[in-house]
Amino acid sequence: MSTFAAKYGGMDTAGIDLRQATEEVARSIEELDGKVKAIKSEWVGDAAEQYEIAIANWRKNVDDMRVLLTSAQVSLDDIVERYRRGDLGEAKVWNAKK
Picture (cartoon, one colour):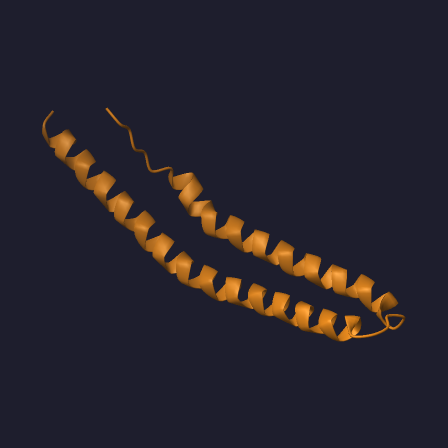
């Protein structure tokens, strides 16, 4: 028999954990940019321009992650609420059979 369990603690913190990871990525990008700016003026050729394109893309990706996380959080909250209602309903059924 297969078992399935909803772990509410994990569901409650999943969105928070993902948001924290996203913000850590954003901080790492900004930290990298700060370090690169110190030496970028010494670069020759297209490297500086290509770096600016890359860093802009990374920042946009982080912004996209934030948007997706907001949407996912709404869905996750709905899922958690439905599981809780289902559990309460089943508990009432079993309690009535006592």
